[in-house]
Length: 402
Ligand SMILES: CCN(CC)CCN(C[C@]12C[C@](c3ccc(C(F)(F)F)cc3)(C1)C2)C(=O)Cn1c(SCc2ccc(F)cc2)nc(=O)c2c1C=CC2
Image (tube, rainbow, N blue to C red):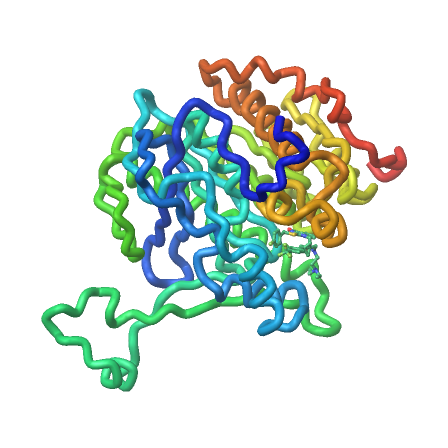
């Protein structure tokens, strides 16, 4: 348990037996390709550097747009508050596992991006999972980037000697920012279109991992030092789950509906609004709803309950004293009173909350992916059996609305 007096701030280290490696993958330079951060079990290396938690300042600009605050001011504040944080993983460390790894595809929330859930993803990787945290290009991320070919004039201005020119030299980073709702624009059509694109992007990420696992040479347009061939035959592609936070929770449900290779789903504080009603009867896989105490409301819960089934396991727990932001990494990165004021922290110690969420997740994954690990020790958490957990929900849902 993190001692409450520890005033060092930072993302908690993963709790599992394996060291965690981390690298980035972008399938091609278009906005239609797959872009994800990969977390995986790696060789213990003390010398490896830790990747930047927020890899570019443009992400802070996007966050400012998302939060409707002034860019220049907030970029300085974010950079001052969060600019130096590292994530609990070793950049491009060599992959190491003495057995095939189960796979999780993770989908971020509205206004987030691929790096903000490292406490969840790194912990899964330390327990032997390969985790791809997707960065969505549906304009729901605060910011994301891809590349475009340099124009003739751009090529002309910065003369790169032809002989040393690499593929990267004639590509320019193009940033895509969060799309705010226009005045009078109705939200559902946008969110419904986005959730379908997001699910497709999760499936595309799985397809890329499948290709990598089969040893098919894949191109990574990002210049990383990671050797992707070491992942050949590393994954157990019968043991695949999809997971996400908030909008990412809805995305996980949409992805389950579209792709039966996903054997189960975990929705962290799901936002059910973007989902069509006819999606619910078409989902056949087990789903685990892990909710915060403060975010949920009757209409949202009643949509989750539409997925209740006598034959397919659908479970729900609520973590006492948590808020919506108790799942992304921000909850670890500010002091108590700033955190509470900005609704980044609830009453509960953030490390205790994420630990409960991660252990309950591992128990559910063992049960529905058929893993032979010791994660079943945490089975009671799936039924909310802990002082800090509520079985089901704290929200009163009127019988009529179910
Ligand atoms: C401002 C008006 N409104 C725009 C729609 C934003 C209102 N809002 C609450 C916020 C996110 C907040 C946030 C972030 C980050 C700092 C920081 F200071 F730490 F950087 C502070 C304060 C602002 C808490 C949410 O959107 C909540 N939410 C989220 S938050 C996901 C997220 C976003 C950015 C992150 F950095 C980390 C996590 N994901 C969803 O899928 C959904 C919802 C609501 C419904 C569906």
